[in-house]
Image (cartoon, rainbow, N blue to C red; front, side, top):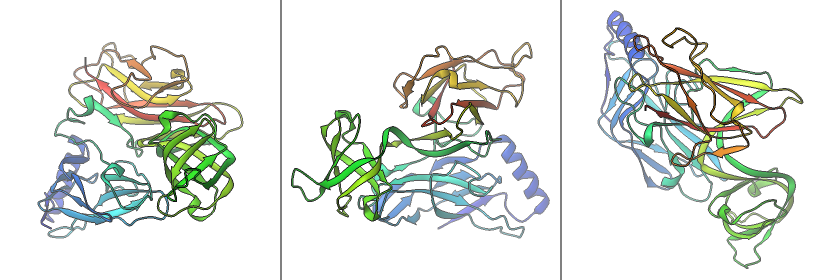
Amino acid sequence: MTQSRVYDFGALLTQGRTKKLTTALFTPGIYEGFVPTVVSGTLLELSAGTFLLPNGVLVGETAVTQVTVPTPGVATDYTITADHDDIQATGGSSAFYTLRAGILGREGDPNPNSLALIWIRHTGAGPLTADMLSRPPTLQAGSLLEAIEDGFLPAPFPQACDVSRGVNITATQQSHSLRSGTASATLSASGATIASQIDVTGLVGMQTSDVGRFLLVSNATGNNNGWFEILTYVSATSVRISDNGIAPGSEAGVTWDVREPENVGLQIVNSAGVGIQTYQFRIPLPPRPLPKRIEVFADLASLASVSLSTHPYNVYTLDRTELSSTPNKVSGPVIATDPGSSPAGTFVLGNYDDANPPFSLGVTIEVPAVTAGVFIRGFNLVGD
């Protein structure tokens, strides 16, 4: 591995000033390369490339980087991060790569000098495959995003940004949940007499379109817990699932959840008995072109649950009033979690002060008491 760290030469005065300037001008993230390739069932290879760490160190790798990904016994989430411990000495210190548990935020999670490179949603169903991987959008100098995915800013969002939450609010990065049930399902040998398949009964609201999605089984014993691909629709109360190569035994009264593993988003839940709780964070905005509309892709009770504003970060309209927006519809529930489909709703932003453009947008989510929560998949930044 050949690695260069730009302006990290041990000249302490120059180094500190340069890093401060870099973090003020550019967004930490991947600027080129680090495309993942599955080499084997437990080995992932990242191509050469360049990324900027949150501490202002620009890292260039001229050779591929390999990371070992173990095969878990059950469904497990991982994040591959680039990390750097800044040593004040000539030559500095190398960035290193870590496989961490869970879906972590893009930057500063779990430490301020950490950057997410790859997210892995391992189903536990055998070896690592390419469809278990996702990666942050590539950045370009001078703006937040290059023109990929039509300017779509997907989760995980930068959760280190001035988060404010109600006392009963939990916000986690997880897959989109379509429907679930508690202590009602039963696992048994497949009626199709296929050893590698299991029948699940006692479900509610199953659909033919659920084939290809995953059933998350929990509160069971041993290998009965985990992600199981839905192979066959049997009825509205029964489906046939894979056994993930571990042949779960018969069991009754398990908790189940139908999910779309590829739809990673921010799930916000209010555990309070009564009342509405709020969750606030912010998303970065590109300096050019400035978005005029923000499309929200989410699964939520109604668009009245979401508000977007630059407040409390700055005021940015031409008449110096607070830049805010109102959804163009408030009926619910609304579901739109995939870019390319019709968004759950659109927020139209006011005029910007071109001499003082916004650098971020505040997002406020209102979550009713004791609900399955609000799922935010992403935001589409529209410049026209």
